[in-house]
Length: 232
Image 1 (tube, rainbow, N blue to C red):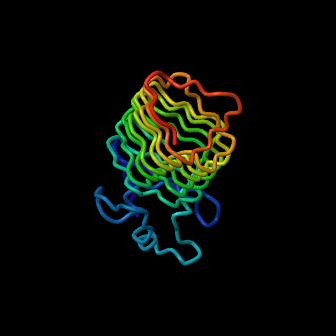
Image 2 (cartoon, helix red, strand yellow; image 1 turned 135 degrees about the horizontal axis):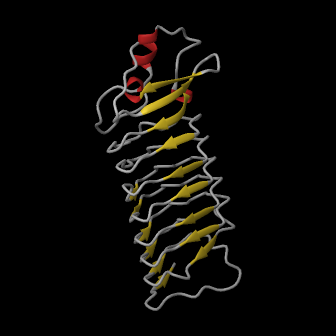
Image 3 (cartoon, rainbow, N blue to C red; image 1 turned 90 degrees about the horizontal axis):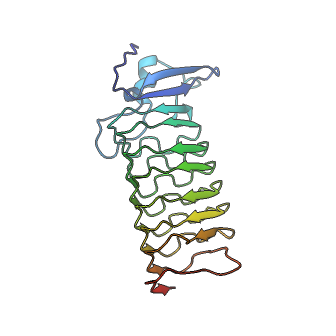
């Protein structure tokens, strides 16, 4: 199987049955082009290598991803339970459930091109402890970080105008959530199930409303900005 690369190729590092590692171009591990619905599919690679059942690669074989610029990630790496390292260059844009269920991923640094974190993008990444948000971020999708049970802190940058429903739902170890000055609305259930979270509203000068079923974790008081309208 020829392994040829160009400067724009994505690469994946796969763990072999004998414990060693091999790097392949990403196009070997999925079927189809860069359209919606692109997912991990090892059939082509396993067939080309004539691997035995014991040697065959699965989504759990993926341990590292290096994505080329201008890639759309769809839910290509959804369920890669052994993925521990991701390199995302500027130019990459995320899509629905891009890394959902990557239960070994501990940290992610998002480039400036990631202006939106879509629905369920990191849903169920139970080992995710650190997210470095780009200053260009403006939007978050529902359930973007739901069930990220190791996440302790989320410093949302100025530019985010709303925090949608279930965004940090069941992030049971979340301790701190920074609400930026640009945020106008906080939806229902954003931090439902986050019993120890402290909401930092000190710069939330545009905030107008907070939805119901949120856990605030504040034992003293909240100072709301002028213009604030409702808390459910």
